[in-house]
Image (cartoon, rainbow over all chains, first blue to last red; front, side):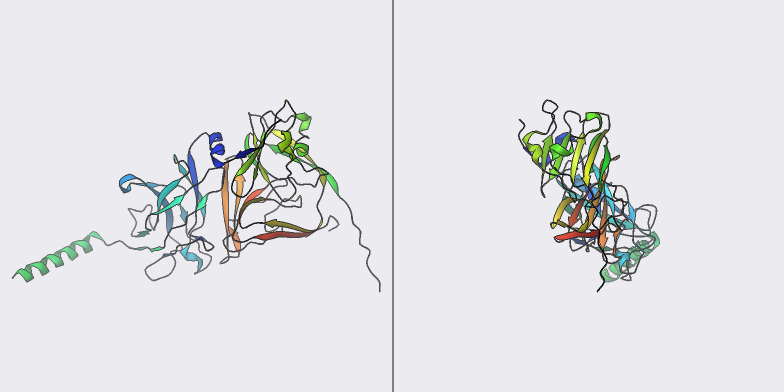
Length: 168
Length: 199
């Protein structure tokens, strides 16, 4: 005679042969998540932008997670939001994870001319036998032009001149 | 006043569902005389239910595990739990060989109602037809999510219903006969469908 075993999530973890967690990378999920990504003119990011999630580690180290995704283009109202994808966070057992979302118009974030990122947020992932969790806590942000080095230098020069005048 | 004759036809049949090693998210596609898990999983082709095969029924927050033991040739008293059309369960196949289960029973017809709670549940089509969930009668609300199981990759593929587009995105693939999915509903509801084999 076999007893009915009440399986908690931890039992399922024993079946899995590796630690991983999953999140649903979507910045619009009903009333649970609504984190708009806007351009400087207030319109949605839309065409030409890539969105990517990053795992925030110790000392703020960022690890890009895959896959990345693009923004919706079906309407102006939808352009603030990404095409949802499932993201597996490798090497992370279920539990709290800190993430950051970035959006950019180039091949990667650092080389892009227009970009932006969210504040860090923490979600609690669950056993991989259960569906991925939504990005509750993600807040919206804007993608803005990155100042060119020449612009930055001129700005510094102007500030320096202002300080010299004040001393005189 | 002339009235059209209405014929009611009971359609009885069988469905072979092949389970691959590791996890499968399945449904009972036909209404059997006995929908208990002991009875449903008795009909392995050539009696090949492997020792240690496990069925996991989801109760909203956690799983209840039923384990097949070849000493008893059953899931024990736990196997009295049922799996009716419209529900679903995970089945874990140990080892490396596929297992084929034969479901025998009636095709469900009439005004069918498959109630689901707010939050997570495992659901399936009460009618044994293959199709995209919305073509099988499910009406999504903004924020509803479905998680279809990729058996080969042992992972979920999520689609979210967004009222901006009036559809699930990304577009979900067709749900196979005898396959279930996870549904995360923003509100309790009912997956309704009127079906007749005469149509």
